Length: 466
Image (cartoon, rainbow, N blue to C red):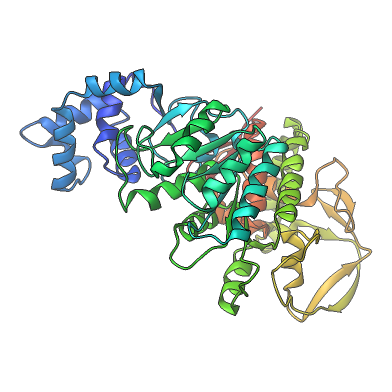
């Protein structure tokens, strides 16, 4: 999201945020005014209501904004600043990287404590407030295990799963971030006052998009859940229950393309509808904490250890793609990138496979989501045996999938879907490559961190020229 360089003061920013217009409306308003908050305030207070030519606001929203403008905002800012709370915006480097990527990120966050440096690889642990004793223990074990692996845990400070997981983190002196459905200085639930302060004492943080002394409402918790998902790289839902807030977080996680695990109650059997829901969304259903931690830790290690991609390789791939496009235009070939892989007389055999009966991973099972998805193919599929293929003129074997220049097939397909001069959407990448959304988002994150791609708008990417 391009951000204009406007010198908005803390007072300007707080005035807009305190009006609680909603993330989408706030961002649209800022965009239409080129991020100039003083201009927004001037038009809102003008007798001729100039703002109406730029954005449609309800009378209630206008009334709230006017009320904040006329209030003693500076006194509130002094009060929360002296309590150790600071406000960061989308224009600040400290703003969580993952949270920027969602479609409706908060324009500003209020932060108490220290945002961990490795927040980009954080795991969210959420679940029911009325969790079973076994679920409570498992949540504590999850928090403690991730802390031992120095992976940040994000949760909501709620009773049940949230509190147990965050207590587990603290038991190992790890770092956890609590995202509140109230302001940072309004501790809710009050029963977790001690946990609140221990999070801060161990180097964690308390955050909220609500102003620091704001009390919680029924509406504020679902909105909070999108931040829990958005700020994390993966989400674990312990003992999900119908109509629980944890399921709202799960839905956000699906939308955000996160790595998702569900750990159901040991005493409850999943219904066919639940199994289908999880399977269709590539959600891993895992019966124990250890399997989840091991799986996520492996994903984490792969992410941070993957070597950087050379800029000249990116250029070569893009040039080769343009040549292929020209050739295809002449021959009127299909546009799917997977058909750019030329097969050199492979032996083809018909392989019959059985559909997967369940998406549940048994204890100690090391199956990945990719393997689970592969098992749910049609009962008769065509597979290439011992074939050698070409991609952009480079040969590689089907087994191992390694291309001569060191790029694997998935990375090559993703690079081929991107362009230097025009943005490509996530939906277009998914359609062209056939990769899962979690694979695409993980790879794009790595490339963005390494400076090879740029997100020019929400979920719109281009290759960067180096």
